[in-house]
Amino acid sequence: MTEQKRANPAPLGLSGFALTTLVLSTFNAGLLSSGSGVVLGLAAFYGGLAQLLAAVLEWRAGNTFGYVAFFTYGAFWEWFFLTSIGVFGTVSATAIGYVLVVFGIFTLVMWFGTFKSNMGLFMTFLLLWITFFLLGIGAMTGNVGLFHAGGYVGILTAIAAWYTGLASVVAEALGAKAPLGKAPMS
Image 1 (cartoon, helix red, strand yellow):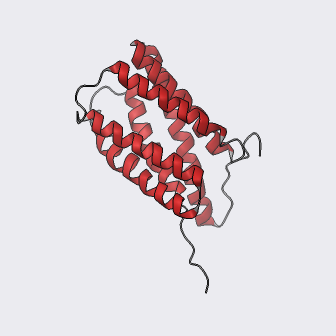
Image 2 (image 1 turned 45 degrees about the vertical axis):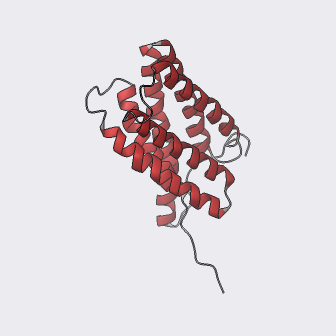
């Protein structure tokens, strides 16, 4: 009996993360100033729910890194959604900044886990921890320049994540190897 081929859940998780991050980052960078509520639906469903689903599928496939990353960032987007609609009451910018810095620390540690993977994942996590630190410190100090810088780096993060996920989809559809490059220690 042969086992049926299963889809790779990583492109779904990366795409959900990338699209939601890109939309929010355009607001964080100051490129858009009205209509930020559009991020909430994305945070709840594509950034959150899709990544949580990808995490469960990564767990089933035995990929600990993918499981931890997608579940954590899926939960982050659900937290963002619930915090934004006021489920937890009023939350100060300082408290939100603190949470962002702590996610930056988590992401920095996870970045070390990409050193032997591929350049796409390596760059996504590198840019993401920088994004979290800039946004977090900007929020805690009220420094709009740092916060906007975090938005711009967030846009680059989204592009790296989207490329990483979609390169795999397109390569598989064409019967080719995804052009993701080698990470520094591979």
